[in-house]
Image (cartoon, rainbow, N blue to C red; front, top):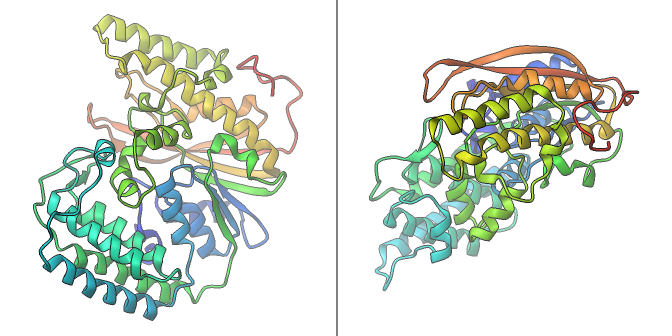
Length: 420
């Protein structure tokens, strides 16, 4: 991320989030200004909506993950007084260090249910103890004006400096940190927020809001005929469990308390991996007649059988592919109702070979599905290439450019019998 783009974005980001300059580029290409409304239906940590606000473009985001929704919402709040935020942080730091220095009968730790949800060994006992004391002090002493920003700063410090997590690009466990200067690391993140607020508060006020909802249920929160442009990066069809990326901070900040909470989160996401596939899922009905998607799924299943792969997740590979593209078809179908005629869309997606090395041309397939729903496929532009973890080959990430002409197609959706 370019230095001049860092304000607000650096408060908390997913690994491999697309850069702010991509939003700048397509906002310019689409001719967006303060008279338009921009949507990101897979908002993540808010890159599109935050950048939209910085550019003076009214923006809306949709995000189902509670931690990501929290982070992106905080990143849109530029109202706290920077001096006041720094002062309360320093006061909390002093109180926390005093408590850490005192002897405790027993260390602070997570409940048994919470420990079952986080990744094993993702944080060592002493840093966890210090983190929980700091969280307690934030809860007790931070006023409402600063509360969320102080918690987000801790979430950022937690995943980047305090915990044993490593990202490369998958989330994993690195060398154990038996101790960490938790309070100092948190103060460093607070200082970045303080610095950025001073800059952001010079910009004109632009409305921006993020709804916590499933992108496949956008009609529950979106007004008809209200969106001029979409810039987004949905999940890709692979074996990456996106909930793992935010698992530790989700638990410590209280968004996930047990396995039931985790399941509810997974049920609210597009089915992009076998860890969030459930027996009752029906999104695959949207692509029952899409020949190429059905052929890819069949090839994956045939290869699984030939290789003798018999685990429960491996048996779901072919179904996960159909559910992913079906979920995206459901999303694109409903999206038509909230788009204005001539709306322009940019979907950043990547090719995949996660399922037994069977190639999935994600951009081409989404473009085909969109055309079946009445969108115009304007172009598929190469955004960047990335190195595949297993094969070490370069894989494409594309921007699928669509246009909504403002009318439904005269013919029925060709890829399913599902009524639209």
